[in-house]
Length: 70
Ligand SMILES: [Zn+2]
Image (cartoon, rainbow, N blue to C red; front, side, top):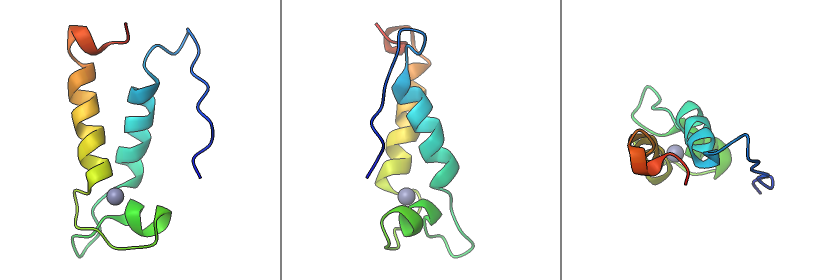
């Protein structure tokens, strides 16, 4: 399971941190599958997987004024 997140006021965008972690893990392997899904969930998923697409969109949204925390 995922460890409990403990967002603090000094970390206004925990989802951004999580998204970056997801992008680092959910990468495309040589055959076009997601390496992160194979490791975390134990099955092959075509890249980009759902988690990776969520992370990409989260970072995209976070770059906008209304997505920075409050
Ligand atoms: Zn994945």
